[in-house]
Amino acid sequence: MAVFSTSWALPFLSILIFSGLPFVGLSARAISTTLENPSVRVRMETKIKKLDFEAVGLQIRGREQLYDLIAIPHSEEVSVERVVVPAATGIARKMAWKITRSGHEQLIFDRYLLMKNISMRKGGRFYPNQVILSGHQGKEQKTDQQTFDVIGVLPLENYLVGVVASEMPLSWPIEALKAQAVAARSYTLVSMRERAGQIFHVESNILDQVFTHISQHQEESGLTAKAKEAVMGTEGLVLVGPKHQVLKAYYHSDCGGKTSNAASIWGYGVSTGTAVDSWCPSNPKAHWSFEISQKSLSEKLQKFAAHPMGSVIALVAIRPSAEDRVEKMKIQWQSGGQTEEKTIMAAQFREAMGFDQMRSTFFDLQKKDSEYLFIGQGFGHGVGLCQWGAKAQAKAGRSYMDILKHYYPRAETQLLKSRLARQFEDSEAQN
Image 1 (cartoon, rainbow, N blue to C red):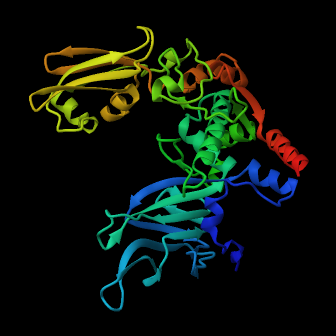
Image 2 (image 1 turned 90 degrees about the vertical axis):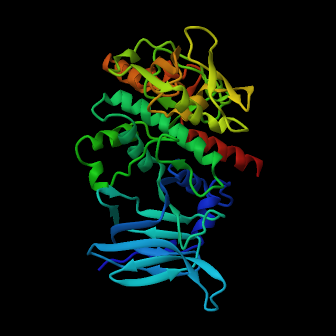
Image 3 (image 1 turned 120 degrees about the vertical axis):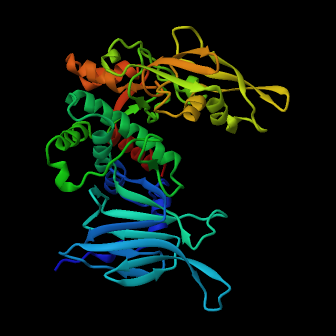
């Protein structure tokens, strides 16, 4: 019977949280190994009350307590909850993890829980071999059952396989998938740097990148192997911006014919150039419309008003030219007999309407009586790589490098390994 090594039974949270700091005292080889394929912490579920799953070879621990569950070779059904436990006096209350297995319960008093496993799944959904459970804290946690996040921890290149398999249809040409892999790798590395002090680096949905964990046996089957091929075929390759730093390489589904700079969409971001794109109209859902009543519109925009909003009486779409996507929305509404006005980014307006309803900020606006009609094109924010355009270019015989150059014209590609090697050599020279 095989068992896990307990070498992972260290102050794991401190190691994970501060993994973005310099690796002082490590050899050149150790630095290269650690940073070429660092661990990504991806939030897979948030604010859940209970996690029911099956696992093989499961070990669970908190920072203070070690609690091993060895279930090899048999599968084990486990349930984890975050609960409030009254103290013996009946006055003080403590939060704890309640772990139920084969009818037996055990409590671990810690904010975080680390689970290591050979195989762990919830229904048909697989989880990485290391998972962190992070309990929420705050005034909203008043009930006896608390909420928590599920965070998967896995090597960067393994994570990218799950991103490529989720973000782009695997039936598409391999060169398009490779372009997607490079963009996703670059985006992830910058997100890891930006959130180095947080418990997770990236979300597993459209707030960052869509991610589904691919188990080891799934990597070798059918189309999923194609995602692995795209990642391995570009291993270590990243996009570098004008200041020679890894670029947070945004991408989207369909640009509608023209991409935009990050600053014009969100008000910030590095400019890597834009592209007029004749490739993306191959998307069968390239054109869309969205209609909303004056009442519903006012309700959705309420969060932008300092006081209760009455009715929206005017909407103005602001754009650089008739050929560009909308950058800002000017809103006028009645409030207590007074007319108020506010201008917000079009991306904020789109979020308020719903990303699936208002598919992009590339639209024309019409008003019919008490209804507002948006007629648009494209899907997504329009910054960086256009996935449908990448597909069309790949089908036309263009390489993934050609595709990346088209969508990031002011960026370059570099191997992460060579960048890290130079950084280490510079550090050694200074010492």
